[in-house]
Length: 322
Ligand code: UDP
Ligand code: MG
Image (cartoon, rainbow, N blue to C red):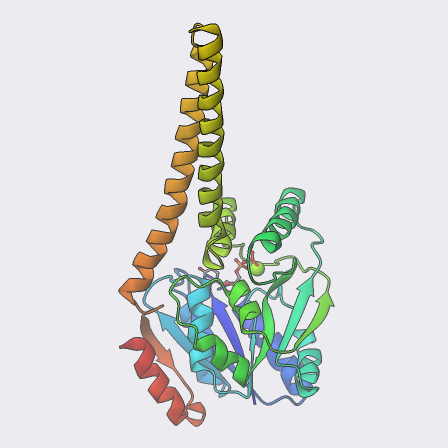
């Protein structure tokens, strides 16, 4: 049995269509399944629609958050509540084409633990593509896990991959990095980018920048190191400069000191110090969040069809919502 995990945030216009399309694909291919919808504090009628769906469809469950906790938390909740031998995570907006599922299931049966889908960037704004390209190039040079452009959260994970992911209980979750961190054999399926039909993307440009920074900061301490190197470089150059000027003064006497150089060096040093403080602050902020050990989400209500509840799941629930 396969679990499909679907994070939903204000997906009212498309949910019924999504449910119909995914059900058709799964049944046509005789794949046993359950659908785990996670309502991430939507402000529209998403929850009502999920109630209707779970009332009519014995394969569908939902978990509803008390507020918007973000997609990372929604995916985590979905994984916690799924009971299949493998889990497929996908978006509700049909940008992750359901027709790829049979192929993914086949790859899983061939023995792959992670089946990843990779989209082209067709139809996306030029600027977003450019930034994405730059970002991946930069990131892969700097962090200790490998990220691939166009690979999103649409993927299949075997049970042991899911358990590995769930064993990572960090508060700042950057799934792209976590997926890569757990390892296992991967299989990649490529597909053409699909544009959103209904509803709109929940990511503003600012949020994308924040997401990019999260990735950088959660997966290594290079920025911290960089600040140290920069500090060392500046101090060393400064020592040479002082030494050089001192000898000049010994030979030629005091020359009128350059106003410009003083201002320039004050500015430069100030800048470097600010950067370093910022970097350190980021990490301390992260330590602060981790040390609180807060749960990743709070559940307001849920419907799990009785035939899917497992003993193990009850225990897990206790673990994550105490
Ligand atoms: N989503 C979520 N919580 C959020 C934002 C998004 O659960 O705070 C869900 C959303 O409902 C969708 C998926 O995450 O199923 C991807 O969101 P979106 O389509 O807005 O992102 P994009 O495709 O533009 O990257
Ligand atoms: Mg989308």
